Length: 393
Image (tube, rainbow, N blue to C red; front, side, top):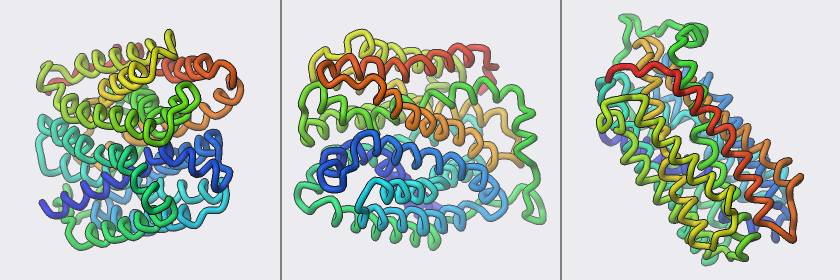
């Protein structure tokens, strides 16, 4: 079990890396294959959309086949294959295909771990374990910042991607060998339940509304727009972008560790989450009001937004508290679908917003408006969440 969880953690590091690495690749991909920021917005959006759409199949797979086979097969075919296609890309369309496959490959990894946590530990421990998993896994965010910039500079981006394809296949093989499925909840091993039952759980609805918008701003800004923002507004090179995104990535790691067990700290599944989301919105609002406060001031505000935006494990723990045992696999995947789907939708929508507002003379105004685009849904989701039920820990 421990060795299997270690490799699930390694797979989740890769998942976090793949959703964030495009920010550092922005300059080189633009020069070598003509993929600009708006093209990469589509590629990143396709990652999130394919990831989100797979959650229905992932939830069913976890309940029927278990986390071992579900995670290993999808990571090998989608993750390894997609990284190989990315390495051979000659234009934006190939990048789009690669990111779709990588999204499919990464889609079961975190939910496989959450499935094991939910089946093997009490609900009171779920938020802490979920936070640790996301926190350690978020090292992939860090690897996708300055270390990736160094590696690209030393070896080139294509050899780097070929190496990642091989590493992904190795991790998928380890999942097949070492992950152990938890015991079934029924005598014959066949799980019952449906997504219609999940939709009938009205207590989930406000949680889903917040999950749709809480993760998206930090994920999309860190994964794509931080690079163009720092480049266009401050003239930052790859090293500068790597340093700023590293700071934001570290903040997100710390946030996942510290905010995952926020229910234990506050004694409430609801109000700790609400406070964190409010502070995340406040840091983003500061960039809307003053989009060009100075390079390190911007980097600090982005880091604050990333730290307080790392409320995903706590929101998941709130939603998980409403799930009956026979719906754990489908339930956590369904909640996750809203999180990743929201990021994908906002990723796609940010492209026309950026194009419509793009002003080469005043790039600060462009990105201030883009940050407002991310802020408004976040505030709306928080308002809806305030009507949620504060389930006892």
